[in-house]
Amino acid sequence: MDVVIEESVSFVGSKLNSIMEELRDKESIIQNTLKQLKANNFEVYFAEDTAKAKAIFENDILPNIKFKSASYADSITMRETGALDLLQNNQDIEFIDTFSPNDDWDTRIIKRKQALTVDLFLTGTNAITESGYLVNLDMIGNRVAPLTFGPEHVVLFIGTNKIVKDKEEAFHRIKTIAATLNAQRHTNFKIPCQTTGVCVDCKSKQRICNSWVITEKSFPKHRIKVILINQDLGY
Image (cartoon, rainbow, N blue to C red; front, side, top):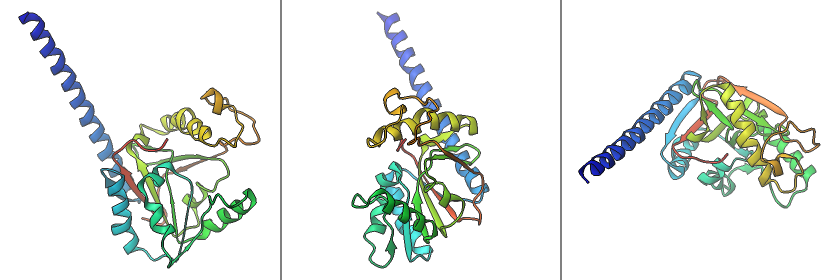
């Protein structure tokens, strides 16, 4: 009996040590990623959860920028924070809703073109490397284009589950996780990965994987603001 107890205690202790080591590794990766983002000229914030992320956006970012217009590109993570509500309910600005259920496709495209010139733009990212690079894959470009040029300020909401080792892992993550899950929630589309759950490099007219954008630096400095959230969020 004593031997069994000792073995059980040893097993539990080993598992606890393993869990603690994983937590330390995760914390180290997060801190290094934050450091690299700052070195890459991004304005960087860290939040423990979505509520804190919304508070950072409301109290630390919005009061320090001038904006009269705002818009967004679809992002599950961004929506989960509730930050979008702060703009949608702001009667003092022009808010361009590029995903209004009342608009047809042509109207949405017009609005998405208008969104390229707003003062403030919100979205997320598909992956972020430990070296502080943002990696994204988009269908029509309304999400990635504002990252490169257009809006005066871009704010990204990113869960720590999006952190990957390097660009190769980012490409793999996006193709095997982000893209397929994103396709499955767009039930009006008809593309292979919705049913297969894996990318087959399709030739569909509604293919969502068209434009890759890698953002290595923010230019001008601090134009792109990153709120990294210590939760698994989005795809």
